[in-house]
Length: 289
Ligand SMILES: [Mg+2]
Image (tube, rainbow, N blue to C red):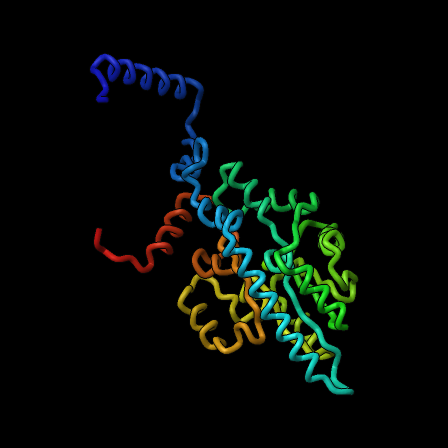
């Protein structure tokens, strides 16, 4: 319905009055630009909905974890079969979040709070709540390793202040994962570069397989900011390693793939970043209708 003349006059008068009141209150500083395109109201316009709904409901999402852990188990079995005396002990090196731990209810919380970008303060409040769950197939795979004398090394990047390590260890113990001790858990607070620790483990152990949801969980060279094509090229150069040395789990909500788009992996919620996200989503787009 179109506005009637009376309603228009009323709205003009109300707007003029509000403006005069604002000037009278000495409001010289312009208000910050509103978040015009972020989630609002009931949040059905949240850009994260598809990705989080997929994590929450897709049997395919869970099946990809079983697939990953089945592949990893085959590599561990093959390495066990080839062992001879004098060999280095066997090991698996794994990331934690979204690899052996699921964080889905954190993302559900963000949706309920009308957040459409990763929220660090909420994440830091969520971690000590011990709401992590075992990724599908993780418990069985890690038990298989433990039962066969294969050591599991956990390398994660987290920062929740002085208790960061304690919280991470708590998560491993909560889920009953093996090798939950200081020799096997490394928590990187100041960096996401896992390579130094991975190299240390490789000096003393034969690593049967690396597990992660982020290419950076395998090698640092994939940590490429602001250049999607360069990151593609780095991955393509190692295409033979996927499913062999490296087992990758899916993560459509967060990770360094975002750094290739935004230049940082935890971009702040802003309309400018929503525009960048749309540009990424239309990188290839048919022009028809
Ligand atoms: Mg991870």
